[in-house]
Image (cartoon, rainbow, N blue to C red):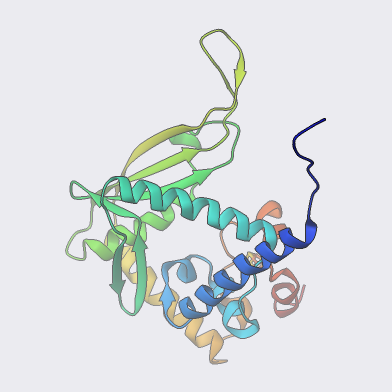
Length: 230
Ligand code: SF4
């Protein structure tokens, strides 16, 4: 006879999930009091979060804490704190600065390990703004994007299929940082104008990752389509 029995407890799962979501929503409501680079990158979401209120589903909550956990461990390993930047009323939080280089840490669940040409465009798009905020007197600078691949498909030395975590770091050369600074200012003003009713919601650019897949994951699809007359 076994020394223990196991049974699943959905009520405890729900209690934990709700606790995580409540804590994240509380954080999000605090974040919504100021403008962030994520607002500039996702203007329609920035508007809807402020008009409709913050939302989070189970999958997004669990993905978020998984990524956040990796960030904390890596930053602690280097004794590096997040770097908080500000430009024209918009805040940017950089994961860490090592040897005078800004690092952006990303966690990926893709089966294929990225190469420079397949690195998601959203990564450098975001870091470009951080570079522009950090080096306000420069038009060019270099940043680092570190990607922790959690479960890439690969083979070990004996040819056996494995899904072992892999870390990849990429150097990215940024140019036209002056243009990026102008985009930050203009983006903030446009969202404020939309919230103030000066311009229509549909004037805001579509969030760049709003392809079919990401769109399904967005909690504001119904409101967004309605305001765009779709
Ligand atoms: S549906 Fe797309 S464009 Fe609209 S808020 Fe969501 S991600 Fe942005």
